[in-house]
Length: 348
Picture (cartoon, rainbow, N blue to C red):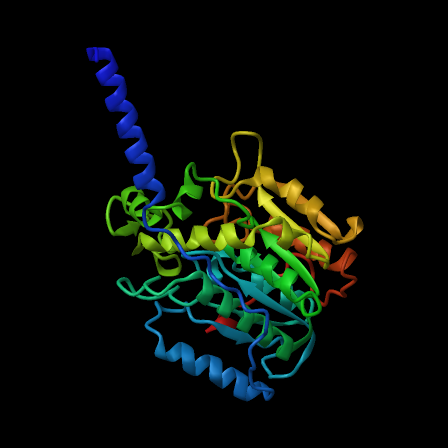
């Protein structure tokens, strides 16, 4: 055997072994997503006490807890209820104040949810995050929404939109409408899909430069409302959640009115967290009547978190579009002007 033949043989053997090692590496079991909503208390005061008691036991950072916001400060059912689903490593503040202003404009109760593992003190954040837990939290949020309002509108940001779309597809009779702000139907980061492949956890540690992912925020208030350090394995579970739910089967099962707003100025200046190029085809796949599907690109927020006063340069832009959608397509009657801003003390 010549030297060149030996080299080729060695390279070929290495490639075969490397390929086998890759595909025989540790794999990720697909999650299961139950299709039944949980039971929650019928009595509104008991429901609020249950939410508050559970949140009081969690080591949350200040003002990160889930909560019910009653339209007139009194527990009573309203015609509409808004349920807000925040994004991965976020909190209700990734959509605030729009997620509070809009419901109050229309006289609706609000449930500001919190995913398990989110909004916690450093060292605890996302330690227990799994797709199954996120789905359980989303189902409970929808169940709470059905208790506090006759018609439930799901408002979401980022991966909260992943859960909202899955809820609308699984429980079409329970979701009146969807309002998605930069929904995560596909991650915009190169190679993100590889996190669900064999050796995904090892890849996550490589990408994170260690066992923990650290995030630096330029905005002073962001560290209070966005998780800044969490296990690198959480990135794998995030990708598993997105890849196993954001499918054609999910999109074609969505029947309710849908509004999607997102940041985009041009080909280069756009949301860099999620793949916005997917939005048109996803909207086309919805079973929703064409007149009830609205996809709006906004140039002024300059952030993935278009409705957040911490991150967005123009959160009022999505608020105007959302109010118009509720008025014109959902036929809701506003009680306050389109640019209404709520009193933050209401959330304390």
